Image (cartoon, rainbow, N blue to C red; front, side, top):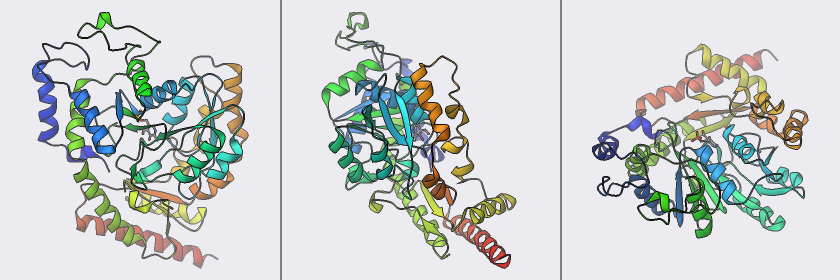
Length: 406
Ligand SMILES: Cc1ncc(COP(=O)(O)O)c(C=O)c1O
């Protein structure tokens, strides 16, 4: 899956440029930095590569979501509709700005089910935040229509789908704003980092200030001369992290080409089993192909396949999200119990605890049959074939055992 697998001299060179000057901060120190501005360069490369007018780097994907929501004016008392299958960071970011996460069902795209979004809209809903999970994408036409009809903001959590697109537009550049994560396991990495992409200049200026204690960055070389039009925080990326990202973005096409090739080979092997079906991708040409997500006919069969893969030592790299503590609501007891270190408002606490009694049967029906296989960029064709054949063997073994026991 990720760019870290192909670590090279190119990343070392960009990092060394920064180490040579010793200026690790992205702002100021104009003289000593000797013209090295890795964060600015990476932001320009992001705009060019993904087709957004503006890009604001952040210290993480979570910080990018928090920044985007604040800049969009989402906050206290607002509801944000987002899927029950995502990484915990999606709802963490919503909570961090005092808004209310409203988690709803996913469908066989593994992303927001448009019908579930419609049903969840209330007078407090301010935004819909689809999460383009596992390299694929949400049904954006349906979600755009809902947002237009109800005058809601559309914010894309594209943290897992760098390099994916929908009808020719890069994921993360379709809504009012969109985010990527550049953490260590993403298709391109900074080690840690993230970005908010947007087309609106005013929104960009808000993101720019928010990530740097509210600085307006209009004081020139003297940071002390900057004004603070609003309160911000420190979500800055460092020059060292941006340097890694700069090397990686130049190699992104290379990474994606390998990812797509390996994805197609593995999918073709799995597709030889008629009982295996695949995740629905609203725009197959736009799949970034970081995972093959596949379904088995029942929960019992899927669990037996997972158990057998584990027994045979081939489970690593395969994710059964239904039982995973990070990605699916079933195991998010801390959210459902409202367990936080700091006190929440009574309203917010009550709103998140409500998720414990919500019906996610539609999502369960999809997630309990789904396995996602992460695509490595390092597999040789022989290794890939061997891996695929072993997976197919396991599935066939389980299917024959299950039918024999009927
Ligand atoms: C869907 C999703 N959103 C947000 C994030 C947060 O990104 P980060 O780890 O850079 O904070 C992640 C990270 O895995 C993610 O998968």
